[in-house]
Image 1 (cartoon, one colour):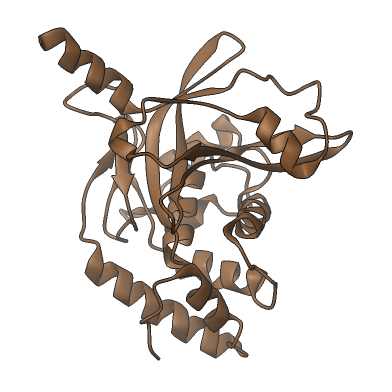
Image 2: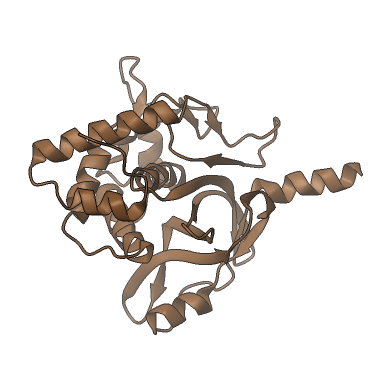
Amino acid sequence: MSTNFNTFKDIINHINTLETEDQIREYVMSRLEFLEKNFEKRTIDRNNDGKLIGTITEGYINSESPIITSYMVDPFYMNDLTLYIEFIKSIKGKNLSNPLQFFHELQNFTIDIFGFKGNQLIREKVYLQERNNEPISIGYFYGNNSALCSERSAAVQNLAEFCGIKSYLIFGELSAEGKKEVHAYNIFKMKDGTLILYDSTNPVAIGSNGYVPAYSIIGKKEISNIESISFDFEGLSNIYKQPISPEEPLDRNYITCNFYLNKKTQQLK
């Protein structure tokens, strides 16, 4: 089966031609083989130049790439076919004429497979359980509310790349309501060069009783120049023609490692 579909539109159109479970599985294996050959193994870590200032990882994460969330536990790996098979089944036959519709399906899927919110204690149990020396798979986090930002964002990264959307996995920070914490999220690059922040961990409460995907349009910029992103709640409200819920803090600010790297460079001058 051909895997020479590199644009979002072509890949979605091809997915809609798949009729059986076997065809879906065959396509997933073929597409992943293509991606595995084009993205080599690499270590993905929060540490940058020996400091906990975050990193930016571009593109598909090879199944042999260790993703290190803490030096207290083993890394996890994006090595489970189920993620891609179930995602294709969830979007197949739907009219995804633009990436914004895709964002909704991506959010719905991550909630379905990981749960709405993760629990740190359950997550720790996943990392510390006996595995008979087997590596920790992303599959260990399905259906038990254990996945937090690192696991969710890594899954989003590969699902987006699988579907032809260029993505960056950001290990950075999130500040809101005067509090700052390390946080993983994604930045997508659209066909026209527009960058869009996507936070799969924190959907936005909107209207009286609903949630929408947390995405914010950054604009046409180079990823190397992005130091911080102030989440555009007003823009999101305008898109959905509903007010942001009063419970939602309206001061989300996302930091990338560029903020600290550029600051260090300026200090050295």
